[in-house]
Amino acid sequence: MYKKGDYEVEAEGHHSTVKLRVSFDEEKLTKVEVLEENETQAFVDDLKDRFIPEVVANQSLNLDAISGATKLTKAVTSSVEEAITEAGGDPKTFTEAAHVTETKLPDADVTADVVVIGSGASGFMSAITAAKAGSKVVVLEKAGNLAAVNGVKVSGPFAVNTPVLRERGTTLTVNEVFQHVMNYTHWEPNSALIRNYLEHSSEAVENLLEIGYQFKEANFRFKTPFVDGKGGFHLILTDVDKRVRLWTEAYEKYGVDAFFNTAAKEVLKENGKIAGVAGQRKDGSKVTVHAKSVIIASGGYLGNKELLLKYLGTTHVNVAARGKSLCTGDGLAIAQKAGTILDKTFGYCGCEYGGTNPKASRPATQDKYDQNLAFKFGIYGNLLVDNQGKRFMNEGLLCDYPMSYGEEPTLRHSPYYAIVDQEYVDKMRDEGLYEYLTKRGANHDNWFIGSYYKQRGALKSLDSDLEEGIHEGWIVKADTLEELAKKTGFDHLTGTVASYNSYCEKGEDEQFGANPWYLSSVKQGPFYAIECEVSAWSTFGGVKTDDECRALAEDDQVIPGMYVVGTDNGSMMYSPYYDIPGFCYGSCIGSGVIAGHGASAYAKA
Image (tube, rainbow, N blue to C red; front, side, top):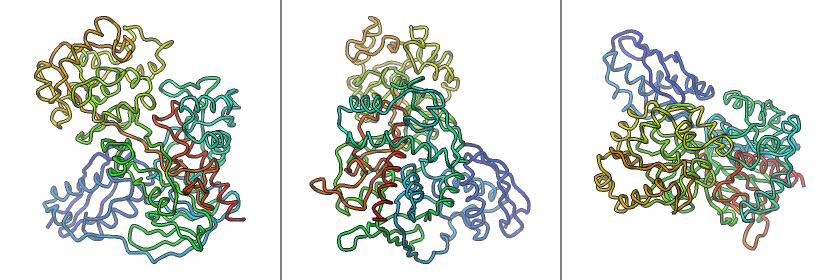
């Protein structure tokens, strides 16, 4: 069947090119070795220990993917298919082989003081806080390992009065942050809960320091009300692989039992009181946890299109990190079934790296790896229009404040479209946004995010990237504006551009008040329309709670023993996202501390 030998093949993983050596004898595939990669170690370990051995043992590629490592698994699958072809075999014998699943585990029935649904940022912090307080804690997590959860990958939390800040001499106070947040949100969130989070934010950071995290106080890439001597953003210096190890070791140290590949299905009650959680593993086996306290930390609903439409009014919201989100609103459904009510605020924590599009083979996710640079026009402050060709916002706000003031307008009009001409394309390719705008008057005194764009430089691959977008169907190119309007179906495009160009000539945006240096006329053909959708690190909004993260039922009655934290907690959140970088992560771990203490105390009482 095969030409005996070793075949070296490669494919693109999450963060790197993955190189494999695939070996055959005359009758079968005998070995798959990973030669080179720069991927998250936990996923690579699972690949080597679970996925690849099953491929070889079953002579099949029809296996369940590793949770959170979809693209990595696909890279291996496509590489093995290529090697099979090179060896003279037929890949269909592997891809169409009988579906292989792992052996079903026996049902589990365990007892604990506290059960936590989800092991992201808030779930992890809840679990170790409760365990440190002396409670027996069990965690149910849908992902296959800790490397798959978003909370282990974030850049850092916002916190006040931490050892990191005290060492630097930062003088920021809880009261200063609290007053700013409440004024920014018009006092819409639960103010007592916001204050409680800020007062517990230091303990959350201290818990991470205790398990081995390293931080430094740093200014974030875009403007924030708290910088330098009043800074509060804690940049995590510990790499992701080490964070995964630290979380794993913390669970072991504090005696937390984690069930992975396990989704919570229902909160159990006995005589009207919380009695635990019923869960189910990916293989179908049951996990029942008997506990007096339940903490819901399932991470929102980013992976559920139906809930995105229901809560955000659109399905055009994409996962910022490559892959499919495991956060599908399970916690909200479970909580409501148990009698909770929802708060009124729903929103998302947006990705600041550009527009994106599901049609793209290289969507905008992070600057740290390959993406199509044409998506930068989704946040660069140039002309943006809706699907009628009408302008809808001050585009400069999206460049300066992509995660706060830029969020709601682009969400409301997603997909939205960047309209640029060839002159602007040439400037971005040859000069880049920093040089282009500093020539127009932007400088470090009045353009905070400028230093970030200075580091990014020019968009050198823009010509080929635009052609790629045209080929994939999310960029439209035309020689004239009239032709562009016809191709896109934007009835108001020519009128919008005419008005916009007049603002550019006057140096004054009479419609939305954009800073003059962002006003770049659209006159020199060819012209481009880049279709952009928003992407998100997470969604937020959900269960209404009191200031101790205790879930509320009708008439705001506390449900004893049920706590809701992180992005499932609707009472901490506000839309658009806070103008303080790290506030989402900070509130997640801060609420985890609050709930961990509360759930532990309730279980003991």
